[in-house]
Length: 328
Image 1 (cartoon, helix red, strand yellow):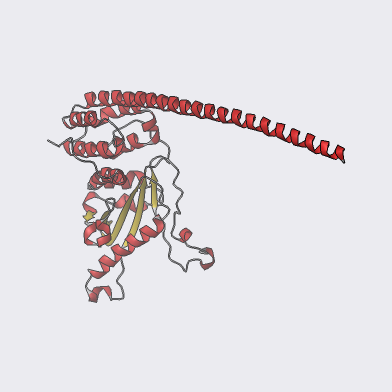
Image 2 (image 1 turned 180 degrees about the vertical axis):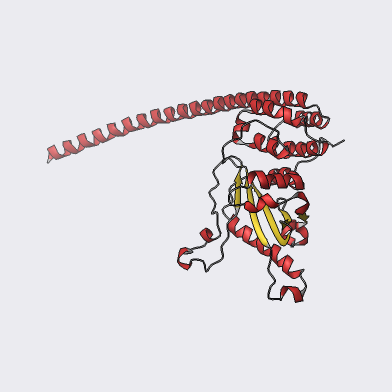
């Protein structure tokens, strides 16, 4: 049985870890490509699951060892000897350096391919490097505003036209497109996106009710992946760790309905607790404001008394000066 007290990863890695396990399954990644990477991606239609080969990023370069989010697949395109390296960058906040970071990873991947190709083959006239297709999956609430091409990331790029380094990347913004109608069968990734959308988080009870029938049909492998995603992504902000662990254990045992009911109740309690803490914080701030207001009033009164005293002294001095002028 999975240990429900498994320590969570650092905050900045939770989103990456939850999604990486799901997308490291070939069928889920292929589903992501075919359903969510549409615009300008006609090549996706020709890909089969057998064409996908996951690449261990740590073998490419030491820089990848420090990263939890990189997923690289090698693809055969329509049976031809053409290989694609697809880099998936998982982002929960807008990273304005993404064009440069992607350039680094693309270069590292290509250098790995080149270095591991026999010298006689790579120096031949007909040798070509594999194409690299960078993809960014974004689940942040704000609009994605980073440059969408490397050309945009360079100064004075327009005047050099096509004679500078350039590439674009596919972006899938979970909150950026129109929501799908809740009809038809949904796979693990579809459920995850439905829950992770801003609208899903805003109306937890409605979203859970819509998701429960799909959650019950998940395979054991998908349920294990969903468990990790719930723990590391969706429930990472929940404060009651013991309750969270109990609910995740119910989900692992296949008790989806009790888990969903418990989650709904827990979210209600969290909201009520949040409102209670907000009211308490407001009362404390109000009390502090009144204390400062009272202190200011006392100082204002003290200043008023000193101002009157000073005014009286000025009047006496003016009277004395007038008296002296009379004596002249």
